[in-house]
Image 1: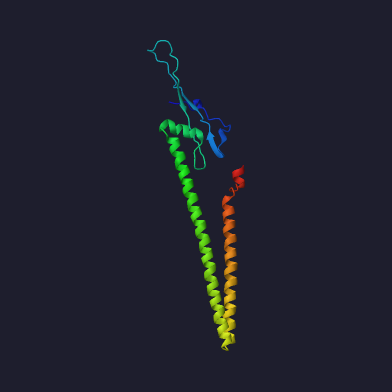
Image 2: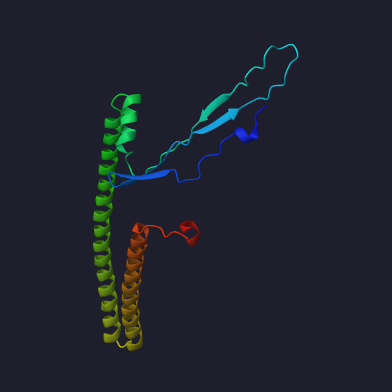
Length: 192
C-alpha cells in the first residue's frame, strides 16, 4: 500500500524555459521529475527474527514537451532527427526550400494574373462606356433627347459606382491583410 504522505508534489516554481532559435520562439518546459516513494508498513511477526527494516521503492516520472512555429524545427530537433534517420535534417531543409519556392511561384502567378485581369477590365470598361456614349450621342442627334441623357447618366453612374466599389474592396483587402500580419492580442485573463 502506498503512503499518501510519501508522494512528493511537483515544484510550484515556473518550469518553462523560453528560447529563440533562428527568430522562432521555442518553448521547452523542463522535465519535471516526480519521485513517488512507497513505504509499506510492516507488522511485527512472532515467527520473524529481529525486526526487518521497511523496504522503500522510488519511481522517477518525467514529462516534457517542446513547441515551435515556422517551417523548420529548431537546430536541436534537427540534430535529433539526424540521429534517428540519416540525412533527415538535409531532407527537411530541402523540403522547406522547395515549399518556399513553390509558394513564391504561386504568388508571382497570382499577382501577374491579377494585373492582366485588371487591365482587361479597364479595356472592357472603356469599350462599353464608349459604346454607351456613342448610343447616347446617336439618340440625341435623332431627337430622342431624354433617352440620350438617360443613357449618358446611367453610363457615368455605372462608371462611378464601379470605381468607388473597387476602391472600397481594395481598401478592405489591404486592411484584412494587415490585420492578418499583426500578432493576436492577448485577453486580460490570459495576461494574469
